[in-house]
Figure 1 (cartoon, rainbow, N blue to C red):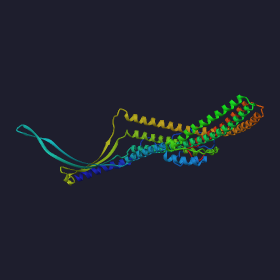
Figure 2: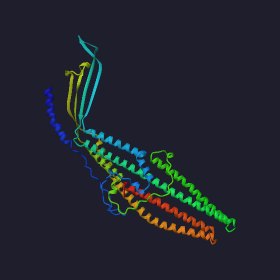
Figure 3: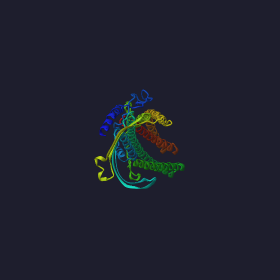
Length: 476
C-alpha cells in the first residue's frame, strides 16, 4: 500500500510542478496610470509640469508661516485628539487588516479536528425465510485528523486580489493624510478668523470711545445753544449702533472658540482663547509654484490608487473563467477506543489534487467582469476630475491672493483718505462751518474703510490657508 501511495505521489509531482510554474501567470490588464488633462503651466504661476503623487512624504508644519505660537500649539493637538483623524486612522487599520487577509491566500491552510462519537445501528438476521431486526451493539468512535490545502495561483486571481487590497490600503492611507490636512486647515482658518475678530473688536472699542467723545461734545454744544437737538440725537444713535455691533462680535468669538475646541478634541466649554493685540503674519504670495506641490495632495494620490485597485479587480473577475486547482491532504487516526487512537494500524491518509471549473452560470461571471470594468471607468473619471479640481483650486487661490494684494493697497489708500477727511470735518464742525450730519457721514466712511481693510485681510489669510491645502501642505 505504501508503494502504491509513493507511485501515486510520483504521478502527481509533474502536475504540482506545472501548477507552480503557472502560478506567476496573471490574467487581466496590467495597471497603467490613466492620463489626466493637465495644462502646461498654471495661468497664475509659471513652472508647472506633470508629476507623480508623493503624499507619503511629510507635508511639513505649513501653519508656522503665520508666525503665531498659540496656533502652533493648537495644531499640534489636532493630530492627537481630533476625532475625524482617529476615525480615518481606524479605517486605515481596517484596510491593512484586509490586505493581510488577502496575502494569507498565498500560503497553505492547515486544519485539525478531534471527535468522539457514540452510535448504535440496526442489524437484521434471516432464519428459515424469516427476517428479524435487532439493535446492533453500541459503538464508540474516536477520530483525530489533520488537513492541509493549497490553491496554486494558476491565473493570478490571488495576486490580483493582493494587488487590489494593497492599492486600497494605500488609498485609505491617503485618505488619512487628507483628513489630517483638512482638520489642520479648518483649525487654522478658525483661529485666523478669531484673530480678525479680535482686531474688529478692538476697532469697535476705539470707535465707541470716539463716538462717546463726539456725543459728549455735541451734548455740550446743544446745552450751550450752538448745536441743534437733532445733532445730539444723531450722535447718540450713532454711538448706540456701534455699541450693538461691538456686542454682536462676541457671538462670533464664542462660536469660533467652540469650533477650535471641537477640532482639538475637547468639549466647547473647555477652551477660552485670550484676545491678541496683533494679527498673524501674512505669508507672501508665491511667484512660482514647482510641480512637486500637487504631488503632495492626498486626494489625487487616493484617487489614483483606487484606479489601481479597480484595475486589479478586473483580473480577479477574469480569473473566474479559468479552472481552479486545489491541492489537498488529509491524515489522522480512528479507533473504537480512545486509548488506541494513536496506534499505527488505525491511521488513515489521503492526498490528491482537485480541479474545478464552472461550466454554466447563466452569464454571472460575465456580469461580474462587466461590473468590474464599469467600476474601473468610474474611478478613472473620478481621478481625472480630482486632478482638474486640484488645478482649479490652485488657480482660484493664486488669483485671489494676487488680486487681494492689489486690493489691499488700494484699500489702505482709501482708509488714509477717509481718516484725513474725518479729521478735517471734525475741525470744521467745531468751528461751526458744517453740520453734525457731515461728521456722521465722515465717521461712517472711516469706520467702513477700516472694517473693509480687516475683511480683505481675513480673505487674504483664508486664501493663504486654502492655497497651502490646495498644494497638499508644506512650504509654497
